[in-house]
Image 1 (tube, rainbow, N blue to C red):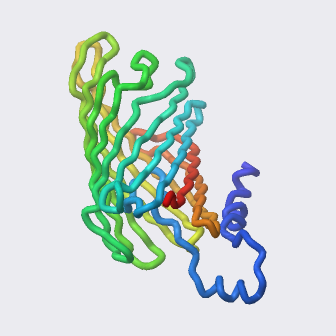
Image 2 (tube, rainbow, N blue to C red):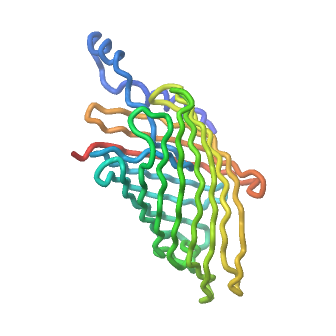
Image 3 (cartoon, helix red, strand yellow):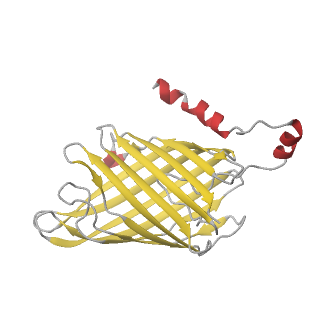
Amino acid sequence: MRRLSLLPVLFVVLAMPLDAQTPAAKDSAAAKTPPKIEDNSFLIEEAYNQEYGVVQHISTFQRTKEGNWAYSFTQEWPAPGQKHQLSYTVPVLRSIGSGTGVGDVALNYRYQALGADEERFWFAPRVSVYLPTGDLEKGRGAGGPGLEVMLPVSYAVTDVFITHWNAGANLTRADNGLGVRGTARGLKAGASAIWLVAPTFNLMLESIATRTESLDENGRRESATSYLISPGMRGALNFASGLQVVPGIAFPIGVGSSRGQRDVFLYLSFEHSFR
């Protein structure tokens, strides 16, 4: 707990300027607002595609109190500009009793339908294809391909208060582990509120609800629901080269049918130009 209590201090330090400056340079820097954090939410997806010539590398790590964990790596590319975005996500899962391995890899396409420059309302529907790369027997995959559609919306209420809204559904050609296959469905909805305490330091509150299906031994669908509320924070390091590094931490808490769930979520993003 002592280490966690030092995190706010760490984020304040991270948000401070990185380079020693002369008084004249400080005056010049003060007149220029540092790049703010935008596309760095944790459980909720923003509706901001990558800009032309900018790539983002995202790592997340979520650990349960039982000791199970999930890591994911996502890389997002403009194709070739902000209107179209391509990305992929590679998950690595660890559960007690079944070891560690790669889960089902996702290939994603997102279209910037609404939003540009300093507009307040953004909308970017996403389509993802899931490849059956995870080990079904060890609980790291669905046993078949999947398709997901997500509708993320972002709205800036004020210059310092941003909201994000998600709704989506998926279909998976699942396997019950006994050779019986069928279609499993899923739903997901969530929202978040972001307070820009400073352009390079944000407080966050995310909430997400999911409904998933699996196949029992007879091939019948069984459903399960999950409800999480996740307070968190994120900071940014902005370098003269244009590189932005964003670390973050959150604490997902289960409510309703997920009561008792207590996780730790870590986030790290590197965003830079490749032109």
